[in-house]
Image 1: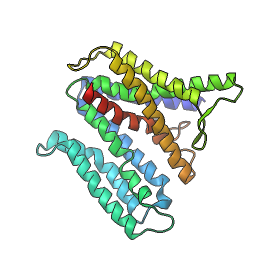
Image 2: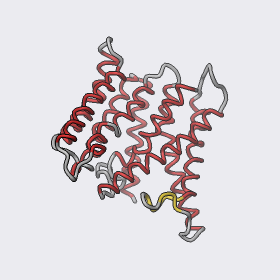
Image 3: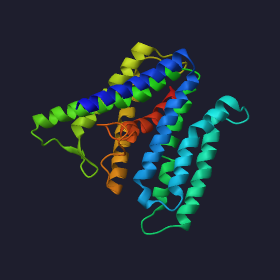
Image 4: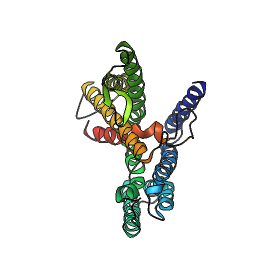
Length: 281
């Protein structure tokens, strides 16, 4: 428990440090944090499904994870003739095609097209929306805070509410998805939604928000609730991957917590949703 607490505190401190550097140094610094997530996340996913990959796809995925954010950074901040988001999508498409060819050419009973393409979509392509959020002209800070706060609040509330209700029900709380994650309950899922709304409301009042389209707190309540649902789907998606390959944790980079993907699985999905939400609100 102590190891888990210390590791969690270090993780939060690192995230907070990057937010401080973003505000008082340069917004581009935040790209380094997302690169860390992309490199390690892609490596963990590729390693998890390695036995199901065609020859060459694992190495291709590692290279892709390393290049993804630098390509975005290069074209968004250094080279002016192509948008960073488009450059990252082109890179993803190119690696996607190569991986598809390798998959079809070397297909055996242990491989599948979906597994061979997975490391080029998850998590990097989803995390692209975090980079795009960082570069929003308005409200980028509050949007980024929501991307990190909503999954954290949602997970914490889900754990506390689910554990408490399960004790009240003496272990008979209704399971959310027992085949994928036996410990998750419907009570916990509802608690997670409440946590997501709480995070969004706090962000609204503490950090402020301005919009020409919508006013008031309601858009934040809706965004917080739906983002919490999306976060839960992200958790279940990673649970599905781990169950398919027989893993308990994606890695051991964070003692007591597992791999980096065990920490950002819900965040990757929430990032995409929150970015789209802020394009609207």
